[in-house]
Length: 289
Image: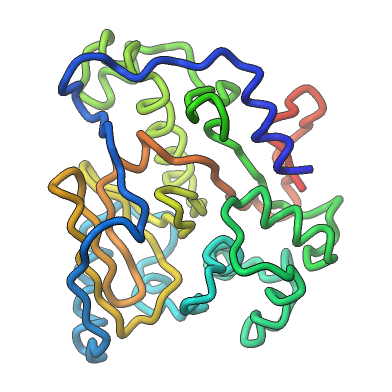
């Protein structure tokens, strides 16, 4: 059901990647999280965790309270390949909406095993499995919202334009780009506006990017701040050949935002309680569950 929404994007004409060598902001190549070298440690102290988290809340515009980041107590996906499911759990916990997936979070693996698979690549696929196994709450009235961003086929270059704005000049001004640059990579700036306006409206966003799903809770001029899905004692500084920043530390992660906006695949966020996001009958792409 939800996977079909992303597949429907393939009916749209694919766009072309920019031909110029170094267009501003656009990141032409990304690496999946298993595809680059890492410097890792597994023994961060409580004081190191606290110091890093406090540094982050002072450096980003946040969707949640600073204390929610400093005191973040995440579900740890471990090595189970369950980042989409765990990312959804961490999103709804941060938004105070555990009623949307009413399971015992401490026993989340029991729910994951009901899917009968080693990994779940896409948020849409994960949500289909949640629905088919009745893990979601009242499906008709929940306030989760799924938004496919780019297609699976067509080289992932067909886009969901239902949330795009027509005023390209305002996007250019907002992000210090020329209108011609926005025209060359419209999805980049449309995604930036979309995510950052959600953050400004105090809604965290689960983002599927680089084969990993995690919850974005803040942004600044250069980076996105995520509440991630791994142990808070773990630190990983990834080598992406200088293309973008990728740091995981203390249960959080910091990633170059333009890489994410260039290549993010789909997102899920939570509407206000009982808001339901309005009437979606005329919009088959952005839907409520």
